[in-house]
Length: 268
Image (cartoon, rainbow, N blue to C red; front, side, top):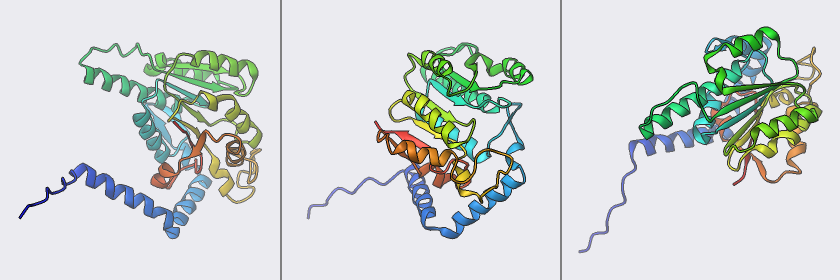
């Protein structure tokens, strides 16, 4: 009797990855869990929880879950350029620069080469309309500063857009993250200005799309609100840009994120 060869058994890593994938996918049908996550996001925002954290010594106005999500994207994409709108205290720039530094270190270890940690082909460009002097000084004094270029001016001003496009020339894998003014018109302008720089397979991450999911007037002292925010801008912009798609896998994995429907992947 002839025996058919048995199928190879999956490795423990494959089993773990499959279990994770099935678990994350199940969250889409778990209305109670999703509602609980949304309630916690709303209540934590009310308590200014997002202002509680530093990254390598600089305040970062992000949820820890989104920081982990950015780390996963950077490891997956291995970008040589990250463009960010919105600088504030600089923590997000330091996060991006430190992740690029880790990529440099891993590349050197794998290649068996030496590394000058001050010299990198990878870069972060940060744009802000008002870079406060004390924040600029702190960022420029940080060990990650050699990987950071700051541009002061409105992120949608023609001269700023032209400057960033010129600085981005020659980079192969580009990741863009939009996190400045959160009104519909401003975010739409940023998408029109910078999404074209995103390389195939990479992402334009639009933060604070969650504003559209909060109660009306939740941000009473801000110009954005339900119906006028990053998510409404994303919806309008995507209607004319079929080269991008919303990737919901990461937001389902995180559950707590300020960027629901904001992880925009450029198709290959």
